Amino acid sequence: MQLTYLSSAAVLIKDQDSSILCDPWFIDGEYYGSWCNYPPCTIKLDELNNVDGIFITHIHPDHFSVKTLEKMNKQIPIFIHKFQYNFLKKSIENLGFNIIEVEHNKRVNIKKNLHIRILASDNCDPRLCFKYFGCGIAEKVFGSTTLDTLCVIDNGDEVIVNTNDCPFPIAEDSALKIKNCYKKINFLLLGYSSATAYPQCFKLSNEELEKSKKEIVQKFLLQGESYINLFKPNYYMPFAGRYVLGGKKSILEKDRAKIDLEDALKYFQNSSVIQQKLHKGIILNQNASFNITTGESDTKYVPIDREEKTRYIENELSKRKYDYEDDNIPMLNNFLELIPKCYERFESKRKQLSFSSNTKVLIQLPENNILLINANGKGFTIIPLNELNKINEFLMIKTDYRLLLRLLSGPKFAHWNNAEIGSHLEFIRNPNIYERGLFYCPKNNLPS
Image 1 (tube, rainbow, N blue to C red):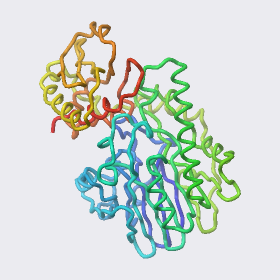
Image 2 (image 1 turned 135 degrees about the vertical axis):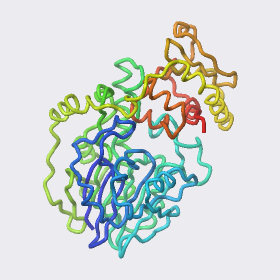
Image 3 (image 1 turned 180 degrees about the vertical axis):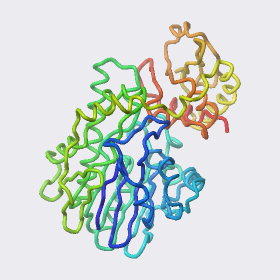
Image 4 (image 1 turned 90 degrees about the horizontal axis):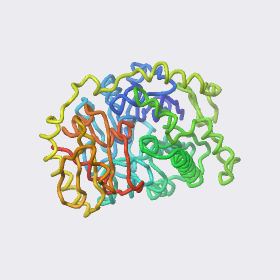
């Protein structure tokens, strides 16, 4: 088999005349415009329109990229996990594609000798992935989560495991199932970096910021080591972390908890817990291929010019507009008519989770007003901004009012989870403590 790296989490896997494309995201501007590819993407979509299948791991826009899929051949079947909820299935069908839902841990044929096995990650907990607005119900209920998946692609002889965005503590059970199904893993794709609003979107001291960045980077590298040690692959490749922020939020790039791809590989190659003679790490440039049979790349890797990357962000990407920036600037009255229904949904989710807290959820509104939501069933109120100093325990959320109006208008307009991952939200916590329920309840605080 042959693997070609394309961009972010997108790879093309071929076996003779069979092929599958994983998580195609080639067009900048996902997450309402803030996420961009780096290096700049040069992929020609028409050259991928004859693949035999597309695998989508989950619904996040850097994996399920509507802007990319809209321009692709709708005759290509798309393989997804058979989730308990059908958000992803419906979203793909709305684009005109045919869906092949794969049962958890079932091996299915793509074409000829090429097969895929898809497993959902389990025990979803945002304290592990650092995506603060939860993606589903807080605990595992149905045996698999409604979001992340990992997969195995094989031709009967050679085996590729794609762990993608699944943090090891979440996906360990599923990873063990894979290990028990295959005698040998030839190639392992693993994430190495966080994709979250923390810490760059949180009000922190410089000391707290730097400490948080180092801790998160180290946590993800340790998870990569765990995957390598579990699967014991012939080859492993860190990937799925090469995004940068564009638009006005590009100034947050320096504060993200991130590590460059070359540095991640160097970490793994110098790791004392990885048996280097048994497991070889590689990285690939865009459009470069690795032959799993021979163990050779078709081109030598050329490191990224980091100064050029900085210039590209400052001179090009920082000028990009977000999806909502052409909307009219809303007034306070535009929000007042939405808030009661939103609070009903917030309260419904709070009760479903059996969550209660004295911490107030505060959302900044136009005309120097604050929406104050009690997280203990005591309703909501609108207060003037100058009364903020009277509140001791709170989680405050600020964002562009145009995006906020979309968020409160319903998920077909904007989703809290995507706004958070896209770094569009600013958070102030007093005290600076993570309360899980506060982020799960607003996530569903939307009228239907």
